[in-house]
Image (cartoon, rainbow, N blue to C red; front, side, top):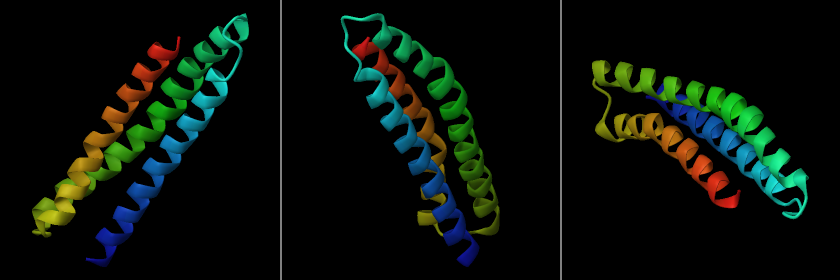
Length: 108
């Protein structure tokens, strides 16, 4: 059970780090003056570089880590609470990535 606690912590910290990074960079990009072109360019760069490349790869690692651990946990008979955690964290990054995209579209 101890290794599942470590995997929970790794998954949670990785998800939080990617989400915090994307939120901060989005706030910085959206903070530019809307009357100038710098806001549009900043949001475009955020979508391509941060959201697509960094966020996508960070969330992909989180999802794969959680999904593989959920499958292994199911085969080894780990309690449902631990399996539910990993299943939730295999879906949550996809939902969060979509919400970030929606936020950018509403800001732009």
